[in-house]
Length: 208
Image (cartoon, rainbow, N blue to C red; front, side, top):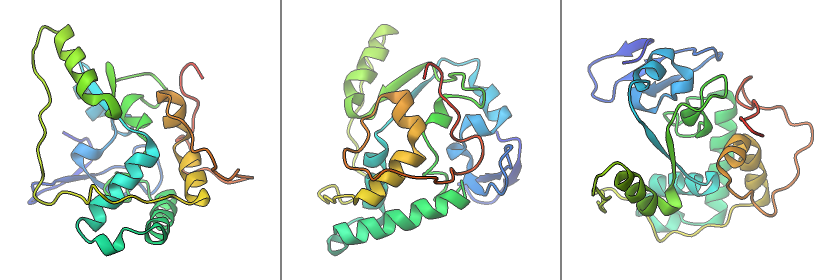
């Protein structure tokens, strides 16, 4: 459950919470980061948990593929870079933009005090192996299986992010790159005197 306002009637119930951040919008309950909701965070404490993290740029491109789905004519560098710039700009003013899909993954793994609240962090790139090892360590033979969604994304779409988009991703997802060891985009343009998004989203991760 969420400790904020619950919207009923739709199975995709959403929760409105300020969570200590001004103008926080509406997201589905299952997309709210534990770091933003004390009740949600407390609900995980009795459990052993695992999380899956993904390279921020790969995650953004995947989001784009889900948007265009099978519309191959939209799979162009120009359209992707325009879409990405617009989405990231909106995220700077609305953390809930896109049903919380653009929030740094850091906030699903660490709480507001930078304490890790997820027991096991798995990498999307090596998910099959990581998941199997975790299950094996708990005496389970459970393995992941492939399922194809009826409205799957256009997996064959390949796009090249611009230097500007790379720089924006490198800045907005600085915590993800630092905490999870992802490689920063090679040719991201340097940012000078750029105001960070909402206060508190760019605190220093443990061990940094």
